Image (cartoon, helix red, strand yellow):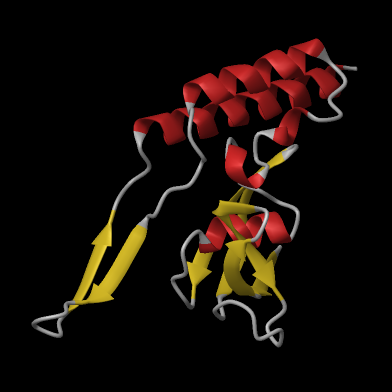
Length: 154
């Protein structure tokens, strides 16, 4: 699973702290392109990698919300609504524990790069997942593996 999201990014007229996506030919907002690829699936949550052609404010957050897949625990863009429609209190408790474990949007820039404004040199930086992000991914892996083991026993 992979894809490309193309849509202009502009301020949301209903919430000035949030960005929204408009059609590329709308003449509203700045052009933005995000390429995404599934890395690992955890039931209702999926770990993805995004590669940006552009670097707009909140680009990943706005584009992922636009295609119906907001970032986990991203309240401003709908990622805290993963509880909606859940059937079991055990799952709801699990999600609440995940929110406590990583009380921010589950977003990490593994690689950042830019051209230095004075020297013109390409500057690239990489960073491993922070502790809370790693712990969150591990918690989801354990949850899914436990659920699969339970289903395979029946």
